[in-house]
Image (tube, rainbow, N blue to C red; front, side):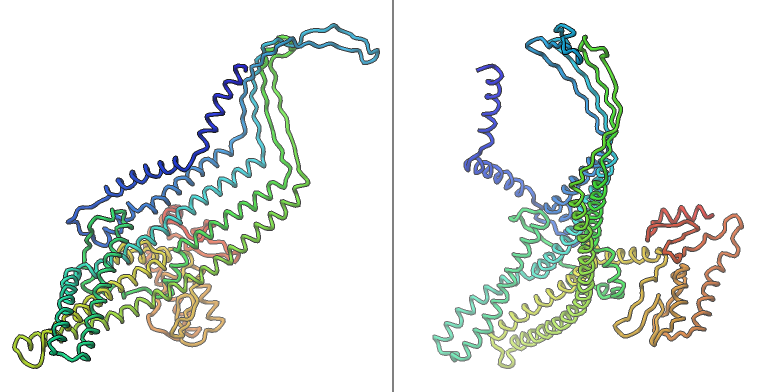
Amino acid sequence: MSVKYKLLFAVVVPAILLGCQGDDFYRKQREEAAEKHLSEIRRNNVAKDRVFTLSEAIDYALKNNLDLKVHALRESVQNANKYAEALKMLPEANVSLDLTHRNNENASQSIDVNTGDESLDFSRSSRRDNERFNVDIAFSAIDFGVSYLSAVQAQDRFLLEKQLERRASQNLMYDVAKAYFTVAATQDAMEKTTRLLARCAELDKLFDKMVKSGDISPLRLMDERKRFFRVEEALMQFRRRHAEAAAELKSLMGIAPDSNIKVDTAVIKSVDPRILELPNVYFLEKVALRERPELYQLDIQKNIISADASKTILTMFPNVKAFLDFTQDSNPYLYNHSWIEIGLRAAYNIARLPAKIAEYKAFKTEERELEVRTMALSFGVLSQVRVAMKNVDEVYKRYLLDDRIHRSYQDYYKTMEEQFKKRAGNVSQLDLDRTELEAVEAEIIRVQAIGNCYLSYFRLMNAVGLSVSGIEDANAAFAEVRRCLDREVPFCLGMNYVRDDGVIVYNGIEFDGSISENQRKMLENFAKNGYRHELKVEARPVVIDQARLVADIRRRIASSYSQYQNLPEEKPLPSKGEIRDDGTMIYNGVEVKSAVMSDAERAALDKLAR
């Protein structure tokens, strides 16, 4: 066996053997990984005396939740792919160096084409050892266009991962809040629940003694036992719910399961009235359609499919490639040892054209499918907002009921306790114990109702698509979204609807009757001129006729410009934005292609106008 075959055998055979693994290999690998992960999980612990507030728990979960870290890593991968696809737009450049050796002479001869006689003797055309250096640069317009669209798709996939991470963080916030309020509702009652469960066990023994002594009838005994059994079952359910919620909260926060966790229960002492001070449901619907990451995901997917369709169109054209080739050859028998080739290569696969057309039609159909999915999801989002909005009100009403029940039980228990101490009436120790159990149960239910009120608020924020860790964050988020809407030109276009009370709202003006075509046109012109923020709409429904509407609009426009009358001439008032008939937005005389302008763009245009 030659040396090269021995070397090949020495490399290939171990590779084959190492590539085939058995069950023992993976079992050992799994055992090592399990030991490693278990030690890492146990290190993720917190101090026993640490008490988490809601915002601290959410922030801790956002930093340590592993599922969210997976989304962050996927985002990093897509970010790297984005730059990789962008670099593929560079021209193709190949550098090669060939070293050859022949085992015999390379010889040739010539034959006369007319006579067929040999014109030359055999002669060598190259040496046994030869070296050739080559540089080949090629540029294809089709390949460049496909690479550019692939880079655009990579950027879209990166943005898609960001939206997936954003939605995952929103769902994580909601899950943490859900587990947090469950733990908070049962944490303070755990000690009292444990004590009362021990009391139930003692009462069960007392029932047995009372039956044997004949102090109570079997019918009365069964009724009393049913009451105590129901309360005992409810208390055990509270304790089990606390354990499950605590385990879930620790899992979401990335804390070891065997660690202790305590939360701040001050938040559920009472209901914050700010959770009931919600914006108008139509405003929430508009915000949800703008902020929900799922809608962004469908929009991005549509752009990705559109890029695939564009790539398909590009590949239908002939592939024309321009190339530059430089060669350096060490063969001494050549007339020229180095040369440069410049040229064009054109190729066109006609047989693939029908397939490309069918592929393009498939992509366009998929785009329409994504449009329908986006519309269907928009319907679902609006329904979620409506349901979550109603749920806030219904849960609060349930809290008011549970609060009344709790106060009634507390008053009843205090009355019975006073009578028992004074030995007044027929209050027995059994009745007092049962009333105490029922009062504690009512207290726990009331605290859970408070937690459900806050949870319904966070559910609404999740349905709207806002990332908040507290009520203050939600109010700030609503204010920021409202400011963004106010900066749009025009703001009130598309704000036409009929409220639940039957009032027609058209471009920010309320009508409790019908609206004429002239009034409609006047309001549309008013909105297109960008004066929406100058119009102060009254809170109550008003009836506006055409003459009053025109006069009111002119008066408000005049008053809005009165503050600029004394400005220096070198700093004229920046012109307002408008929308032309073809749909193009004009701001300070500059055409703006996007529907929403950033603060930096607006400030630059205002400075330019001055």
